[in-house]
Image (cartoon, rainbow, N blue to C red; front, side, top):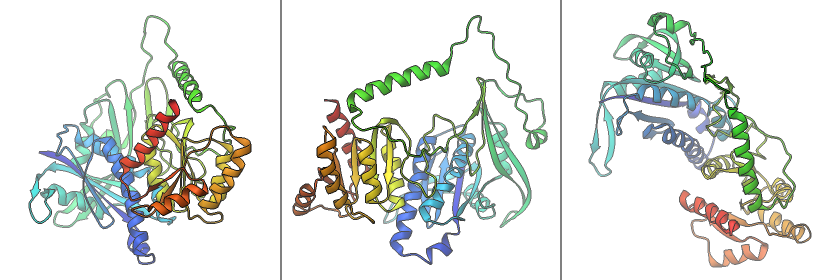
Length: 424
């Protein structure tokens, strides 16, 4: 079948990995690849494998997608928006990615050896790999085949790709390549009067004229505002608003330029994102608040490892809750005194003020300032938390413990169970 194949590679990884320990390398790769996996799942892209710092995926197989080129291109532009996360996780200000895409026929199947794996074979895979290896850091390089497929995309979407010129491709000679830049959505179909060459360099979306609806046009923003207010009121009833609303700095990574007919997204390192997509990435140097849900229903994550915070933050945001994060005990104590949370996951071993001391001090403050008690779980790095350790956590003031080695489902179950308990 015809599919689109993407390869990505972390630029600067080899030099960085030679200066850190093995557990840091594995932890950072796991956290970042989890972000890519989440985006791929949401966009309809299937991850095939990771090879070192390389990440490979396909669209159009094993599930057929006739519009695989458009889907893969939108996913690639999504990946570019994670570059700030990449730099934060690896603590490397200049680290970036190269991305390459090609589309065409492939042969796929399960290779049965000691560990059976579903794999792709063919010239399309090789060409996609060459698109990545000869690409430009921080950009998405696409082949001529991919460019033409995008120009014929089905649906109300168009892409802008800048011609890079001919590039020497191993085994292929000089090949025309392009750098994918933007994607535009609109309701009406684009005009096709311009030639392919014209649409390559000139990006003029058709003028959008308001349709005559024969009456008043409903105020969509006002309707959404009323629905949101109603939802917030219901959540406030459950949570009681015991603490004052947190008034710390907000992190906005979402910006949208739109009108009632068309939406134009700039998909580059400082991406502007559709408000329907949850991105919530935090600015470097300040990790105290991550928006991503109803503010009255929030979870607090406390750990001194940024990659851990980001991985669990994205996991919990799937429940629709806002996620606050803190990197030491002092910051966590301040947050808990200002706001009540559905649940607090806290690493007992933290800098400045340990998690155990933080909980002990908070419980003392809580006796004179709160009616309902905050639910706090110790986030243990041990695979099995012993009975004695659980007792120690309980005496300090924790409500229990949760192992970081448990499955993601266990963490999500804990959050959803707390929401159900609060609603009773």
